[in-house]
Length: 238
Ligand code: SF4
Image (tube, rainbow, N blue to C red; front, top):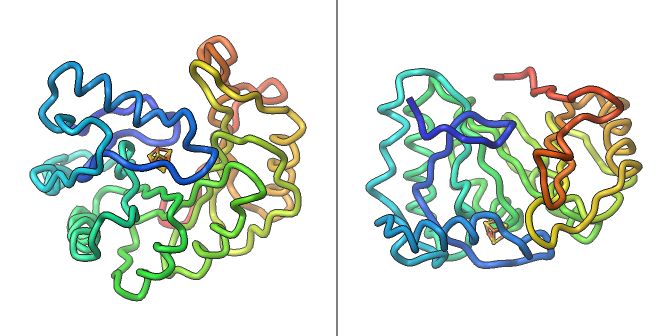
């Protein structure tokens, strides 16, 4: 069994690194930061540094012990391609993902330029899904960086969606997740932005997943779009 996650598009989380630094508007109300501070206050050993970038090598082998195949979100509390994480350590994380080939690993970064720079130093196992976060038009270049990598499954997390994203280039992209921001101070999302992205996915035959409306109370706002849920997943290597 893994460390069960409440995130709708995954099953478990694995954090061989914790902590991060903010790099764009999407980071403003970073969930990982809030959670790290809470866990630090509770005295959890892995969070003794709070949200400061910290390698957790004692966590590296954890997925090898999880017998049941599952989708594993890698570094829900950090960013694997953070400039403070040396290539050697990233390669160790990739080696574990290769060895734990009964799982599907979902890696998500905002450091797409570093991801592209390191691509040729990484061996991409078939079970690694690589994604980039894009919250607004200012950051669509991250998608081009992702496209340049040799990851077999490529996805976008458009969350927290802060504006419309017309005219996305979805070539080579297998999966798109959309979500509104949640929690105190959450910035609003508009239905027209979501519907436009859904239609772009439909036209490009890309799997579309609507995670949440978000807002102050995300349980109340839910995740129905036009009266239904949208839980598509990439079919290749799924
Ligand atoms: S990149 Fe992700 S984990 Fe890092 S500060 Fe931004 S939202 Fe938080």
